Image 1 (cartoon, one colour):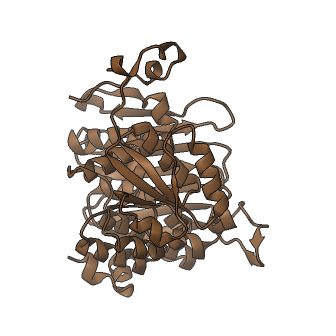
Image 2 (tube, helix red, strand yellow):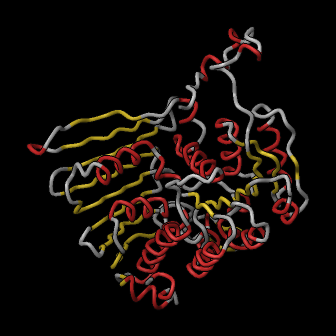
Length: 404
């Protein structure tokens, strides 16, 4: 049985008189693995924080093409890890360091595929941030590469580890509390995309488009809940408010800031997704309805006030069983480490995978299917027409990969 962690005590000034020899509940095991983080922007630094918090691996080295990003990441990380970081001069050196046990690729979307080509030469375990690529052809090449790879590639779709979605999967798929699932609805309301180096997230050609860049998380959740092949996708949306006056090097921003997406699945499950990115706060909602009840999972975070995000799950079964509403939380230190704690549990899955254990982290094929739905939705936005998924797959030369 794993030992209980008492973080509030082990880090308290009043407990520093307890020597290392007398630490049992407070003792931290030596990290087993050494990680190299490639790309030290917002997500790269989040992975560094989470690795230090979990303690099963230490950050061995970092690489970024932007010197300032490495400087800031190194400065921010000094308080979390006493060992100095190796700073690599180039990507190949970062990927092929024999002291590294795994590579985390956290670079901008448009660079994922190119960076991965060098990383694959290392034959090391690879964590690849979402979206796995910006085009379906590159995503398909990653799936095929993973099938022949001597190690593994884990995709960074960490929303499946958020507490409300973990509980939703448990209630609907494991316990079948709703009976047979019929409809799935997901919504996200949030502020605009944040600033990035070179503002790459303001342009569809660099990000893959909003529904690929941001919403692949939600299409992954919907696919997992529906447990079937998507058949038809229709989307309506566009750019209404955000970055209408923004341009870089003479190129105007073209990133969508709202959308409504409808998805039909082969097992008759119908799903919808709503996105709005010109809101003053963060709110997510999942509603699943079956022939025996309804489940609602919510998350809310007011970024203009201090405090943690709140998450809850409501189950309404009527005469079919017990109805309830439950507040959900991870410990504060975990929740505040990044993405409301989901990245922490994503790292647990990565560490377990490094130890040879079976995990439920996102595979390249699952990442590919999330991209298929997202890319079909992007096409529907552009054309105003529904997209037949089988035809879409054939038109993109993916039938041999996805019709197996």
